Image 1 (cartoon, rainbow, N blue to C red):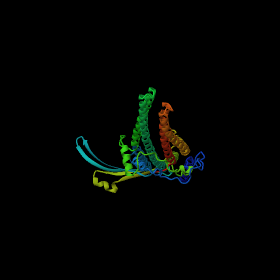
Image 2: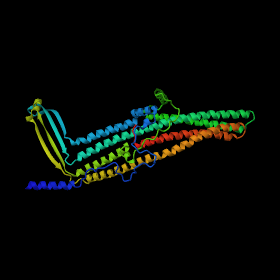
Image 3: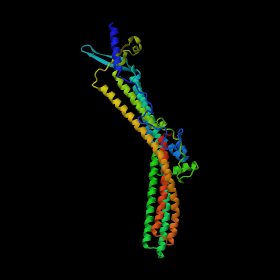
Image 4: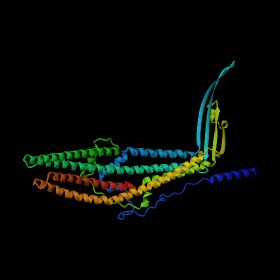
Length: 472
């Protein structure tokens, strides 16, 4: 009768304690506090399934080779990969609590005992002791803790995928930036040649009394400015070259142009000729699909699930902990007697530990876990909104950049024709020197701006693929 009453009291206590604990909520990646449209804003965007291999869409073997080398040798990427390995190892450590912990401690002791009037005696003792402890995870506290670590390891893997995608995008953007810088250098070199020819023309006219000294000074000043722009363009080439070499995990020297030429020759392509046109726009898929495709979004959602599991584990600390412990072994002066099972002594103990008063430590841990759940949830919302913004922004910029590129292409065509006309007009005295010099400056600016907008188009396309979370 007394035993039944005790069992009933224990069951009632466990039910009361268990009522304050919750399980991990079943979350879905698409459950956001903001409404997500069914399609992207630009109506011209194809919404069929997103195609993954965006690097191949540029059809540039040099770019593909650079991305391959960066993914193999980049040190930032290797650091992130090491963090993934560390997260996996931590998950193994946190999973160990589910299993019994067994230790074995063999030992040997030699002692000498002295006694007055009886001399001394020596003896040796061999021992073999073991200890076993096991917390029986009745309530799932350790399993929830393990689940959190496993999800955090998966989130770290998502970080690695996002870093790989980001690295491929940075390599592509730096590659096109280097190509543009090389072309800008060629434009600047041609400008120096043109300005030098004008300076020689005006000096010749000055010697024949057909031009003023001021015209000579203005022409030489314009030539000096052109040389300064050429130096700046060359400096930009070396800056981008070294940045790209760092991304490839190489020493920032001057060997990269040779590597690019070698790769171009092996693939039978021409290096430093022109910036390519952006490839046809790939289908972008639907906005909701972004939540389950983009690696950083999946990592943020997985971390949210991990905080849910840690909250569950923290709440179950309020419940009794059932433990099983065992200890035993044998001790003898003869080593051969250690293997005799009759000489072994052992004991087994099973017990429960129920927290009664911890000074607010357990409750504080629960409140801390709840706050971290809210932090992770809001962080996921913010990452999702930024992801949508990046896609919408890149899609909208595509149209405006194309219009800008077409306008600048027409400007280059017009200014090239007007430059020849200005030179003819100056020789015949129809215009002043400032008009001639201004026409050449305008030609340089238009060519430079057209190259810059071409690269911006390529960068925007890369940003779009990066925002969409495509692989390569």
